[in-house]
Amino acid sequence: MLADEVGLGKTIEAGLILHHRLINELSRRALIIVPETLLHQWLVEMLRRFNLRFSIIDEERCLEAVIDDALLMTPRRRIR
Image 1 (tube, rainbow, N blue to C red):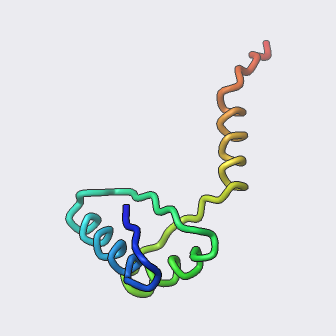
Image 2: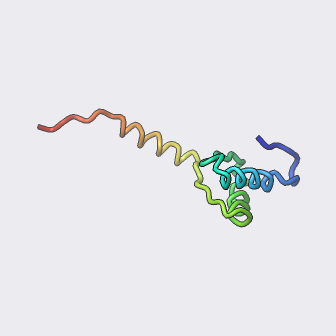
């Protein structure tokens, strides 16, 4: 977890740590949680500075995943 005052470089520090872990195969995936107001800034900075691309998982996408999982787990009747 990185937490500090505004403007002290948390985005860059997180990018450096993540980039290092990925290139050294210490991590394959990462979960980054940012306030919605900083989402665009994060996406731009991670792509521009570290060539890292992320998928956005917001409330709508989480609900879709829950519905999809529920449908996959629903028993289906066999038609004879």
